Image (cartoon, rainbow, N blue to C red; front, side, top):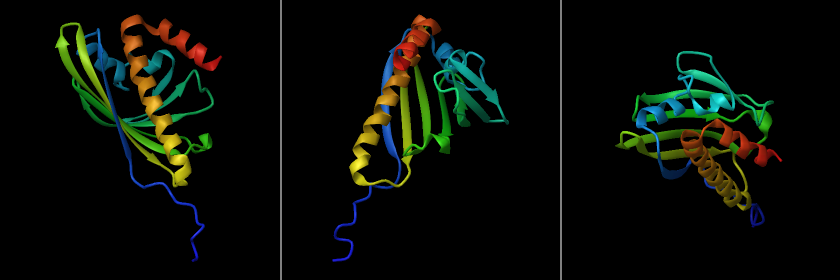
Length: 169
């Protein structure tokens, strides 16, 4: 009888989300846009990426200037794949604890490639009633991320700045 009215907790362990898109740019160009060690990284044009160690960085986005996102490179295969981990800042107060995000790049021609983005998301313990909402939010964020990468690669940073201005408005 004890615990009968205890709230059910969300499952533990990571949630995996996978999405793909074709981008009208070469695999090498797209790789440069996702490699945190490359000055052409797409987030460097809408924020600041600072190297803090051999494979560690901090990122501050113009949209969220008061937050610092630590990034650790886990795997880098030039022109093919890139995987990194990011632990969300505690001051964000989010239910999301950390993500491991990766992109696999498949050349489809000299100026075209397919990008498959995979995200593993870990959450702080939460009640089951909040879990579906959190999964929806991380899926939306993943879709937003791969869409912005495509737009940035094909249309340039000004298109991204316009989108972000609308998101902030």
